[in-house]
Image (tube, rainbow, N blue to C red; front, side, top):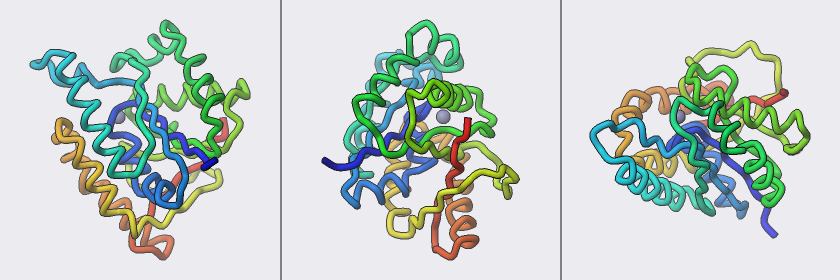
Length: 215
Ligand SMILES: [Zn+2]
C-alpha cells in the first residue's frame, strides 16, 4: 500500500501555493497525496450565488489535484472567517481525527502559526489541537502563504525539498484556480521569489521549505 501524505488547507489554492512542488514530487514517487480543504471560499465573490462558486471551486480544485498527481480533495464546509466557530459547531475536530485515523498519513502539511491570515492560523490551531490530543502522531510540517519573506528565527527542524523538477507543475496547478486570479496575481511574484530564494539558499534551482510543527 502506498504511503499517504495529507495536505490540509483553509482555502482551495492554499496547499498548492504552499506545498505544490513537494506534493507533486511525492505523488510522482508513488505516494498517495490527499488534500483536505476547510472552506469552499463562497464568501469571496459577493456577486455570484454560493452554489455557483462552490461548483467552480470544486472543479478547479480537482483539475489542480489531477495536475499534481493527487488522489482527491475533500471539503469540510467551513464558512470563511468563521473557522474557529464552525470547527466547534460542526465537530470538525472529530471529523478530521477520523480522516487521519482512516488515511494513516506518514506526514501532514498545513498552515503556519506565523501566517497573518486568521483562517490560515485557525487551521494551524485545528491541527495542533489534534496533535496535542495525540490524534495526529505523524510529523506535521507547515507551509507559508502570506508569511513575509524573511529568515525565520524559529528554532524548529526544517524540511527542505528540491522542487526543480516539479516547479512548472506547481505553477500550472496554481493557474488551474482560475476564479482566484486576483488573489493569486498578488501572490505570484512572492511564490516565484520564495521558490528561487529558498533554492538559492539550499543549492537547488527551486525549493520549498517547511517548518516542523511542535505544538
Ligand atoms: Zn487561504
